[in-house]
Image (cartoon, rainbow, N blue to C red; front, side, top):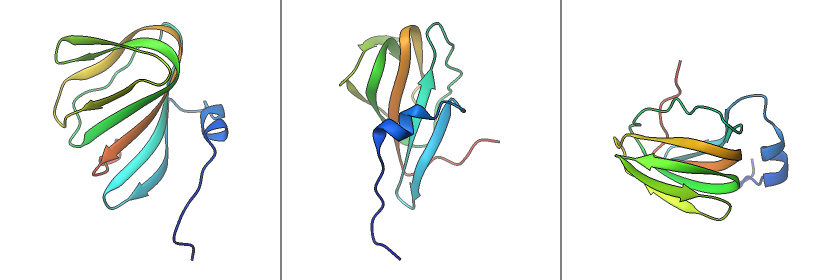
Length: 108
């Protein structure tokens, strides 16, 4: 068994069959790609894990506890566990690398 995993962002971003696709899960961290189409709605709710968003493409606003943060490619935003947050005003198809630490429990 290898002691590492490697991924290609282009391939991960190309799969838009689901809005969120987790590609890595370990005891202390999970990672996935989150897609929201232009004009799409983000149904997120507060999570039991800290999150880091790395915007790979697109433009939107991330609302966190009532504050608005404009995001676009290269923007990195961390959101504390339990904080109310969601993406709004998606002006261009949004693609975000999401890091949960520790991993959130998969939703039903």
